[in-house]
Length: 79
Image 1: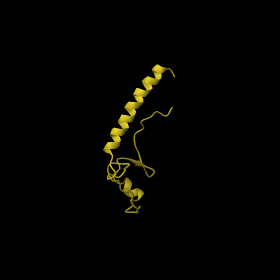
Image 2 (image 1 turned 45 degrees about the vertical axis):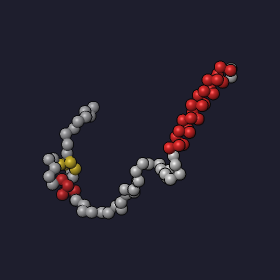
Image 3 (image 1 turned 90 degrees about the vertical axis):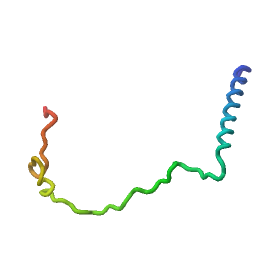
Image 4 (image 1 turned 60 degrees about the vertical axis):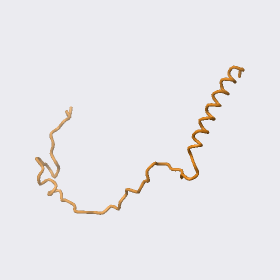
């Protein structure tokens, strides 16, 4: 490296070291390190089988049904 490059890098390094020192002042030993600002809790639950509708019950109020399935208008051409 040239002298000019070394001088430039030394100035940049001083800024970086000063920034790290400033951040280090804000961190105290009393504050535990965290990965998330809010405590996280497990949102999973056990799967429990509840009331299950039969196919006939599911289709009871369907506007249109055919062969035990909901029948809907085609939206794509079958060419």
